[in-house]
Image (cartoon, rainbow, N blue to C red; front, side, top):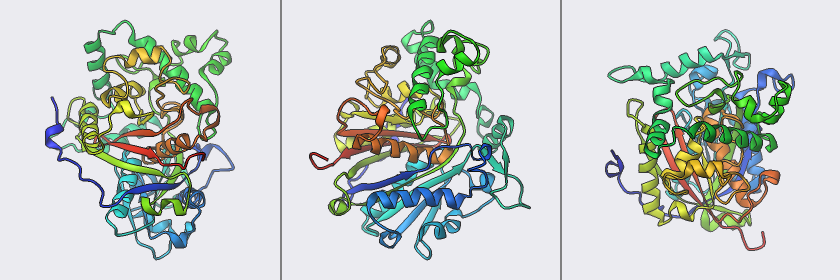
Length: 436
């Protein structure tokens, strides 16, 4: 099965587009901390936007328009057009703006939209960003939206199910193991690793949590070895195979699913020919492949990834073999090796062995998700894609401290997925001046 032929070829940008600034808040559980409890959407989005402008060396007066993304403004904050409610927080009053929502794919589409505006020539400097409160939901429509309540897993499951179309579709698969493990199950059978997949997933969980623990923007700062000590166990491996990490599917355990969090992130893009006016370290967006498949498509994430990658590969002439760093949506943790394989970043059928050999770790030769990924670092739904961009840009600059990869990054790929719909493959080029 392939949907590649149904996706029309990408056309080159009318002019090059580069990223000149990025900003982000840490992922956080705002309700659980007295210092963050009561923060509003405008404050979080504004913080990230101001950080991105500061990073680019510009002010709000220099920005022509802004793009605002949020996974679900209705259920998160009872808002219809949230871009209209944040402008005052970072100096954008009266400037043009748009809001969009593609569930967990929102952050990736946020970059695509901003790049398209600049590539078309309509605007020169565009700010794009996302903000999500995914750990909680608004209390009720009788109170201001910063008065929130915890969102239980049961409530979250209802929200996800209710976000899926139920007319003439297999909507009941939403959130179930049949949907979440479809790609993994196919992979396990094709590669005959039924006796190895448990070790692969546990190894992946262990070092992803270690990456997250070293990341100051992470919602988790303890390793699974730390957790083991808390329960008087010998090792992370013992903890991960214990009752505290129950099996929730055929292969997957609790540690292989997303950890919901709150946060925001933003980026500034401009024409490539203007980029050096603002920074010595611009990152050019060479192309963005994009494909969508609905929930009732078996292994939809695999096939949409195939189509999106095919498109950006054909446009740029680059393959996964040319990429030095791979960042991917992984609210199902196995996507840390499934998606890179589909994009030729690692050899077909060998991703599971790359995990066991440590080659996908920050210290490995083919690093993936250096921030720790959604199952450890945290997942703020629509904002996470923009956090992936933030992490990737900082890695390309060599500014990730303990989590910095061990080799130069000339090209990076970000593979995004969200909401049983949007899959995007973005290829970035490091255009930093020599010595910077």
